[in-house]
Length: 396
Image (cartoon, rainbow, N blue to C red):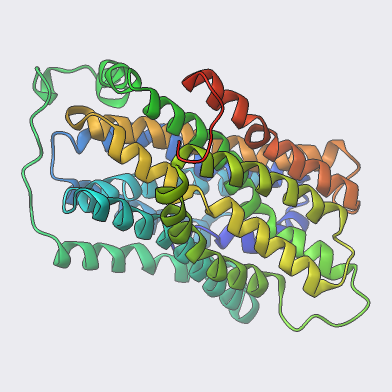
């Protein structure tokens, strides 16, 4: 995950260096999610037939090449956009295949807890990426921010390769892989259809979509928002925007794990609905209060980050537990495809909302941008009711 936040850390500087609009800056951030979305269903469905370790290793190699290419070749909107797409393709071959490796080792209640830790470590990766990228950019220049991040995926592959053992993938398909068309491999529609017959699977997938749109838009623009807020302060701020964002991400990590534990007691549906609505409201308040004392703004951003993360592990653990075993890999692929597809929209939507509402120099523009990315979460209680026939209550 070390390359995940490299662009977010350097967004404001590259926007100025390359004379980009907010919309173009957001589109580059969205490139990662477009690459992820394009390939995640293929990699995940392949884990139903092949050892996930090989897929994971290929993803690590692609991620390393993408970060290195950004460091060496990026010089404008188009080249940066392509490099971010390539990074998304690489990470898409690690996240869900890695989760498949983990979920096959555990079952029952322990599986849910392990999945929550795995999901939380996504946030740890984001925090480490912010710290390394911020330090490298300030010390050596922005290209080194991407170059140093390229080492992370290689280390990840060494760790996974040495800590796991080969395992024969389950044979669930009636036809061998070679007999299938490319479209069937990338988009296993029949397996998806079987998975979507289960109501909880539909609910978790829809929830993950609106969750990711808000989550990844916020992660892409948090450093820029904190930079804007710091510029409004009348007193010196002790840390840079990147360091503050990294600290916020680190503090937010336990919320995913603890959120899953709370959900196991109060009910997954109820918990997801509650934290989705709360997080979106806090996001709007952040924009409106961006000129408040810096410590108060940081507290709000931290609360927003914790609320966004509080249902992340719950959604993923619920999907893993409820998906039919024979198409679990395909279901996980569709889940990730929908989530990161929405994540691809988020950063660009945020930037477009800033441009359309007066530009990034206006607090109200930031508030409206946060509202745009949070409207799906605010509407999720109604979506949940349409799927299950009644509103979520404690215990549901």
